Image (cartoon, rainbow, N blue to C red; front, side):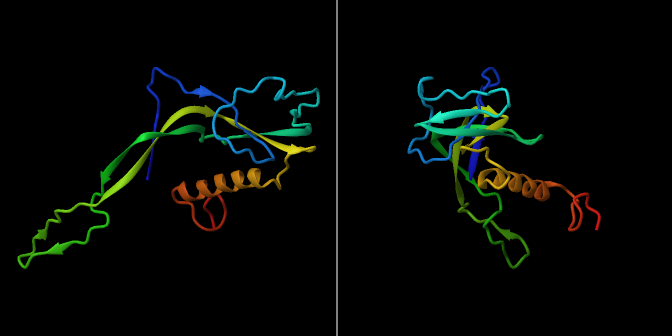
Length: 165
């Protein structure tokens, strides 16, 4: 199980815009890149453009849908264990009808993540062209949001999105 800790209310997480590049970089974390190596520009046509290792990239802003927010987290060194409340336990009964208490409660490991940043959009880059609706990341994000909405909307039945059949 994961637990995301929000920062102290006095400390606001820093705002950022994640960039999804069409390449594999074996690094996770912040980069102190100089403008010489990474300097995205937005020309008059409104489509972000950058050059990375001599290759021209064009970007597309993908907004995080209303009601959601993107967060950047880092794993804390500490972990905690939570007792399972009646989950995973079988109930046993005495002959007089009283429940037998199970002394050994199961514990579940909880990884603690600390929120260090938040974002409202992701910039998806494509080689020489703008990432379109067929881009696997863009399509995956849109499908996931639709799936999450269907799972968490009470009373939504099979049929139309408004719940009618």
